[in-house]
Image 1 (tube, one colour):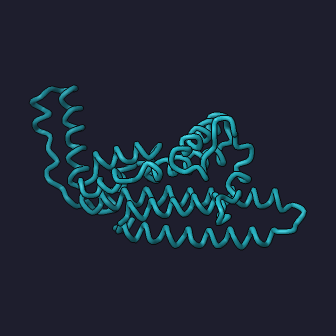
Image 2 (image 1 turned 90 degrees about the horizontal axis):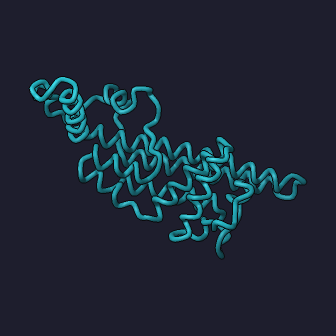
Image 3 (image 1 turned 90 degrees about the vertical axis):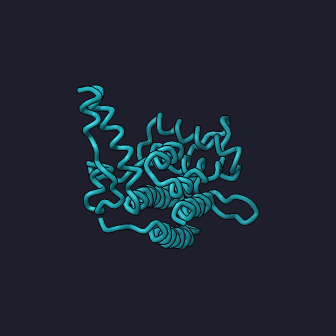
Length: 236
């Protein structure tokens, strides 16, 4: 992987989502009047949202990687501390004191990525809280501050998007319950996207394609716009 710039990551994601929204609107328009319009547009909404959520996961991974790539000193210091603790438990203080990685500010991208995820997968986060916590532990304070500054609204939308994506992909009882929990939590920050505990989502596609507010903007457009705003804030 080549060296990444956080702003470039955010800008690239913005461009990809713009194309995805344009595709959704064109495709939905082409389905109007068909006997299968209702089911087709629901399926379209799910597929487009899934694509956007996957792009978002990749953007978050690239942003986190890019910040550690810019300055690896905090990440290396944290790893050194963990290694010393492990050696101390297994062999004692004397041996632990001999472990030192030194001051390392820059690690080549090709060498760094296996240190972040030896499997070669995207760097993933269970939810916004875990992402912010990991940023605080492994990034320079100035970079970690961007994660910490994410609003409660953005954190809840990010969580909702992740759990909707999981439910579309897995269709399991547990993924549905996690999605509904995240949607209920949106009540305090974004009622247009939220659900109440007694108002279940019976069709994810129908939920996503539904228009909200006076502007008649669909929920899928709102979600994708919010994900762009999140990456823009982190990549600024």
